[in-house]
Length: 400
Ligand SMILES: Nc1nc2c(ncn2[C@@H]2O[C@H](COP(=O)(O)OP(=O)(O)OP(=O)(O)O)[C@@H](O)[C@H]2O)c(=O)[nH]1
Ligand SMILES: [Mg+2]
Image (cartoon, rainbow, N blue to C red; front, side, top):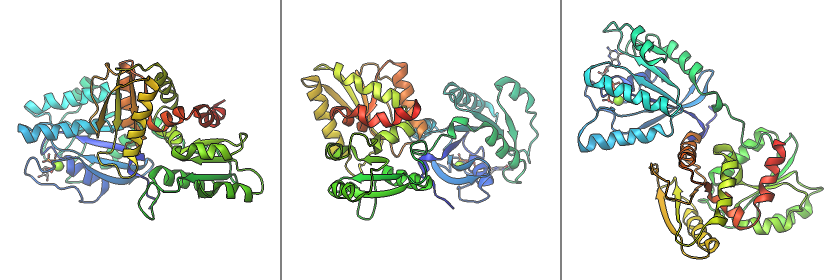
């Protein structure tokens, strides 16, 4: 099976009260019994991600969650974890048990999903042991309701059909570089001499871009910045595209002829996952910063696998320099993102390689609603080096 990185898969999350049959529903969809099921309420205690290939939809991740009615200190922590999953959900399945207290919560979560423009499918499960008329609920909520029995495998096909129909269309996005290369194009990839990844590995974005280039039948040459001049001298003709790590941009920029399109991994990933135009606009806000202004650095990884620390320190230093004095910089790490970002003059986000597009877009949405410019590390580095116009030119040329 072709493995898609988890972050690129459509995220389908199942929400519902304890014991409502969430884990059983996931097992019924996958035809496996990987999700833990028991008649003890509170079996699933944290989000569980199950990659799966759904026919005619493609690679998805089914996300199992703990009960939305969980209580106590532990319980409210678990509900908080489930709330975080909302940020990465592309399609929500809400189980309507319609039982007393639960029904209120089920409707609350349904409303939260709708409010975030996330398509929702309502499910009534355990219909092998009870009869439920779905018409009133469908009328009240105005969403598709599917009746299933996970235990007896009833109507699972209808649930899959509903997922196919309601899966967000924008999810079928273009590839990372497919619009930039033609079959047979020569593409040079450049990485710093000290490769910022564990031995025998590549950085996630480099690996994804390399694979995408091969899928589009480009001819790829991969070198460190030290070998680049030698490679260019050997090449019979000019490359059609050069993609480099932002950290060695200056060196690369100096040896790649101006007529050759040149861009960075970070810029390509920002275009793929986020909103390049907004990130570029955000970078322009750097020049308006004044000493004492509040800036939020937001990072996805709690533990930096590679060179994240270096990126953070560098970006802070450059921001202070740009402002001409000390800024008040706060760093926010992990899946939590502040609700209120209105006090910040600028948000600088990491590349977000472990986030899916939805998670990153939610942050863009929040900063946009509160009128705060947002950019990312890769794009601000390009800005600091004064090379932003060159590295985005190739992408904007494609759009013209
Ligand atoms: N009769 C019947 N029982 C079901 C069905 N689906 C789940 N159950 C039972 O309901 C109980 C809870 O199922 P789970 O799938 O563990 O429910 P859950 O929502 O994941 O529960 P927590 O993880 O504890 O929140 C188990 O005893 C299941 O066997 C169904 O379609 N029909
Ligand atoms: Mg469960």
